[in-house]
Amino acid sequence: QVTLRESGPALVKPTQTLTLTCTFSGFSLTTSGMCVSWIRQPPGKALEWLALIDWDDDKYYNTSLKPRLTISKDTSKNQVVLTMTNIDPVDTATYYCARIGIDGSSSFYFDYWGQGTVVTVSS
Amino acid sequence: SSELTQDPAVSVALGQTVRIICQGDSLRNYYVSWYQQKPGQAPVLVIYSKNKRPSGIPDRFSGSSSGNTASLTIIGAQAEDEADYYCNSRDSSGNDLYVFGTGTKVTVL
View (cartoon, one colour):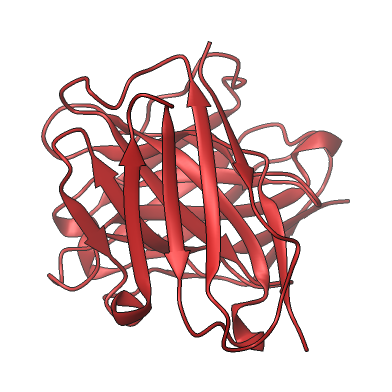
């Protein structure tokens, strides 16, 4: 059974660094093809893809946020960590981690999601 | 990144059919996936690889795609289908890896 769970601070002050942890079970990020992504959703708005890390430690970032994002993994703990620097109130959102499913060479999708963690940026 | 555009809202009478459209250049190169999101809940995958359903998703949900347009169809909509729906695909523009649609709110009347 695949599960993912996000954790992190509920309230962050502007200019601080946000660190979020995704703890997962039911799969291993050492398995070829496995990937985990972070996605966020501001209140009342659409989903926004943020970052991805794969089994080979390749990392990909949202182009507009890349200077502020770092994704990493700890395979011994089954965790993926996302850090976002210089936090701003516009970063207020629910942050989700999700596993990537792959079907063939042209089909990639988020097959399992965590329940999300709400982050509010305010002084 | 390239964009995936969806109508903001559609409504459907109980038991009738509703079609949700997603348009974007990335759909010419990559399959679309669809997600259902109810208020206060995480998104749930309902369609992947254009028209495959994960285990547990009712067969009233189906998908199709042609060119730069993909659609999610609900045949015989139920009250529990009222939700936001998002399309998603890899981003073929070369900027971001993934892109989500703008979302469609489905109201079941």
